[in-house]
Image (cartoon, rainbow, N blue to C red; front, top):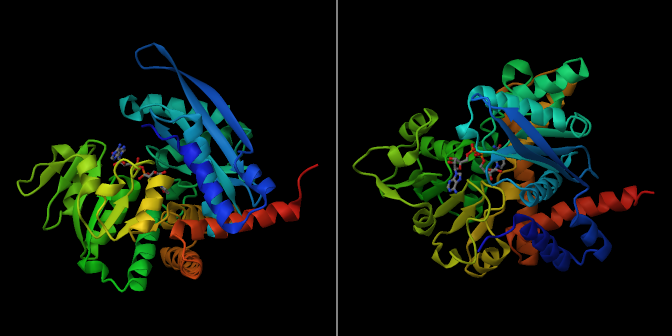
Length: 416
Ligand code: NAD
């Protein structure tokens, strides 16, 4: 059955509202997005036909600061998905105590079938359509599924051309040469690694001896798999949209990354020791640590009984439905929630934004040190609430994040 991510996001608010006895007025307030923009993006294709794509940008909450959230290009993008992703960004920024709100954007398109020229036109027109909705003190986009530093460079250029001045602070995840931050591209993977290391310490597990499975082999999945592999951990299965590869002795992640970076799919990689598996089989394979790092709604009521691991580290946004979450908690599987686990990306995006505004750039040691400090402070806070109240790590993370938003609403008051 299709799970609507926005319904999931609202259900999560209900769960935490009940746990923390949140004012019902605030609960209703948080279940609505502040504003949502739907735009049409007409593109003259290389073959002379006109195609019109639909794009979105949503602000869930700007009560603690300007909106922050990625832009996704995917054929499955729709308004409810973007609303859910914007809502999760609010909690993520709040959990890390960043002075930012939650936003997200997307275009319903399969970018793989576009030429580079078409992709650039799509990006520039989308930016023009949402131009009054974004800006350094309004809402700052960043990369997400199928968007990257080049796409951010086109957004920055289009925005700057329209404003008549360079505005690097309008997006993060830009190339370093035009105001991007060192360390932004691997930041989400790095944050995942810091959080996983900390969790293993709490559970007295030696990370290097754990068997690991990663679903999704893009920016997030590929980077965390790479970090783990380079640290000597055994990554026994990985997958992308084409399917997965399994090897009990462990995969050579460096070779697989070389392969996929050349626009190849994992399913076409040839190694006699590797077994081809489907994404469903991958999720059902026994391991110690499972890292869903592709899309939302991967672990649901339908497959949760097949999950056999000790820790789930959520690299993707919303990979576990509330129904599955409950079962995992009852089974004693530790789920490190997305809003904590994958927050390294928005954390270094925040550093990029600060560096752009100040026009003063940090070195990689400072980036990694500050990232480590902020993410581990959030981890310790979440872990403490989880232990104290005997609730899941997700509910604990939500209590902290939602409390800060509720307090900000209370202090600001309801306008007018
Ligand atoms: P990406 O486009 O770089 O990679 C996505 C990967 O998932 C690709 O390997 C793709 O083949 C695979 N994939 C797509 N559909 C799949 C499916 N149905 N089954 C299995 N694999 C599939 O995207 P990304 O930036 O790595 O983002 C992945 C997830 O992480 C998303 O949920 C995103 O919102 C989240 N996220 C990304 C960042 C970031 O900094 N990029 C930060 C936080 C969270």
